[in-house]
Image (cartoon, rainbow, N blue to C red; front, side):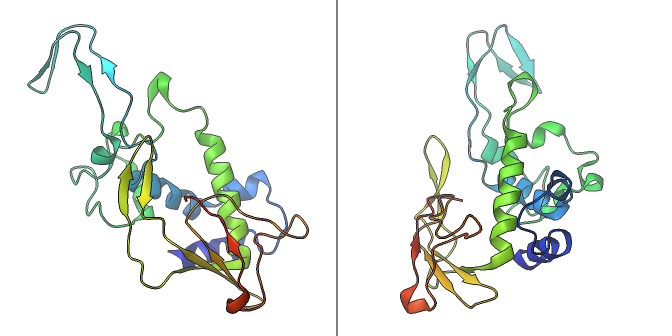
Length: 212
């Protein structure tokens, strides 16, 4: 998947220092990649409870007035009724032809209706720009000895434990060790520098990623 993402960056962005709106909108595979990550690991894994305003029965399940209903996003997004092999990362689940016939409420990482998150457009803009600029310069390398982390359920879904990554510079073989997975990047030099890095693995700088 990382290879496909890098190929799309090379094809549609190349070595451009900044991205246009059209370029961001054209990153189709990368957007599907983020859609799939939100399916498997929605940040808000359980919806805010809603109180039932009147007695109602839905598919033989009775909800009395005054009771509370909570939608577990994580369970919904991994339901094999809606997603074949839900444990697999499959960005193409989110192609237009794959969505046809799927219940629109089987995928709600930003909630739905009048209560949907107004920031979802900004999320995709920032996420695509950040990952595109990273993949222009670096390969993301998994740290040795670390497998898939377990989910930690708090106010949001987090990895447990944090997983160290190494970012390997493509043109200069510069390695930068990342202390944990996340979004805070220590910049150095001009505004084009993505990470503080040394010229060898032994001198690799640490960059504080919290979660990704």
